[in-house]
Length: 383
Image (cartoon, rainbow, N blue to C red; front, side, top):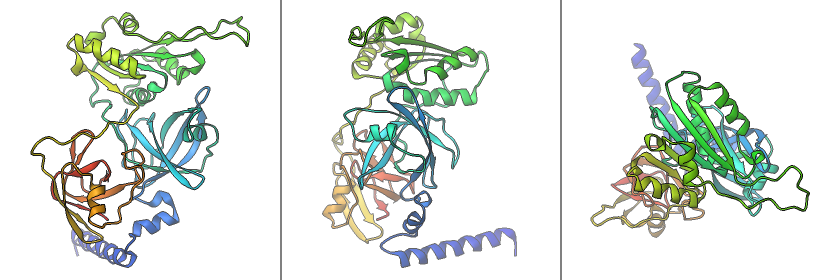
């Protein structure tokens, strides 16, 4: 028997075994039982285990996470939905990935700034322990580093807006560590004080040893060294477009990535727009994008729910979650707003449309958020 024939027979046998296992496991899947043994073995419900927690200045920490077999990877600049168990309830939050993309099993990092008013971020920064398992959603966002990157780049950030840019910079360092002339990157970052500047030591070190990287920092609130404990800090002076253009006079000749407070981003967008450079500007806001209605004539599709055998017609303006519920399918869900990723379902066949962006996707085996996706063609979901 030839090696190719042997491999073909082995593949068919494996498929038959998994098919039988799926029938015996119904309504669950074999993958669900693997997840009970170890959450990192589940491909349907990706998870990661925290292996280290590193302080990042006052009120911030970097979590080093070892992802399981369900993790599909990310692009530099994207953000990660993280599910955290608090008192028996899973809470979902999104945080920018600050590590460069890696192969299967490669550790990833997120950097979290604690919000005193929040429930999840203080726990992650001050109390989470190595060994804790987190649920992981798929990496999201189109605020990403292109491949290949443009030669001349400007990055602008304020506060925790540095986090997606740090993922991009670390990716550039990994691939172009010391090559002079290959790139020309300027980072302008604003923080209240030097002590509150995330990654400040690493960024200053990069600027000192990399010929293609320049780091400029601005501090909006400083306290005189002789100030007493009862003295208030001077009023904050936010980073402005005038500051940016002054610190980087050739800003108009660079591809620009900016992430920070809404006011700063609005001012940057207005200035770049007035210069006719909107196409060269990429911005990231830490907020939700509301769903938008489909245009006239947008097609829907016929949906088959594979495990239940139920079929239904999907209106192009109706989320798959609602289509399934109306057809009597027990659909998983959480927030119903595209935040918690509790509604993830594997796509077996067909194409789906993101109601927030209008983008159409159709990768078999990918996980789709049924509460913010609708059918863009006949499709099959694994539920």
